[in-house]
Length: 204
Image (cartoon, rainbow, N blue to C red; front, side):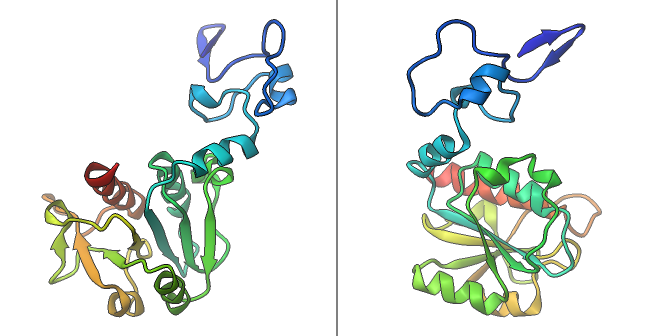
């Protein structure tokens, strides 16, 4: 981070010295500096080079989220999926979603759209991926005591109502997240982060 006045500015400034001979580097970033929300390993790399590198290491889990009412938490889900290197994020329902919470991570994260739950299920079946619902429903299994599959889809419902009735009927299993306070549910973006980290602890 560079110090500007009394504040620290994220990233790095223009590259100093002779530019490296590396096809992964973006000449514009080398000239102007790189202030993007990326780890230091990817400073000055082009978006295409970063995605190509991530694709060599992506994990076996996918994340799906229902989007029937233009959920504002999807950006957070995408950002967290990028942080945990999910294979892909699947948005079910409305195609449009608020990208502000993604903090530009959507350019590095593969994102697919499915019009209905049935469309998602057909895709998952073709890929031989079990679909695991995440919701605090009666009869659900605590995720803290569940061995999530190495290859799977973690499905989250709309903020508020949670998994839709169609999703509840479709999933192979529903996992809950232990809570100890008075609230009935936690933010969908937070729940997604907890579930992804549960997979990471088991398989990464």
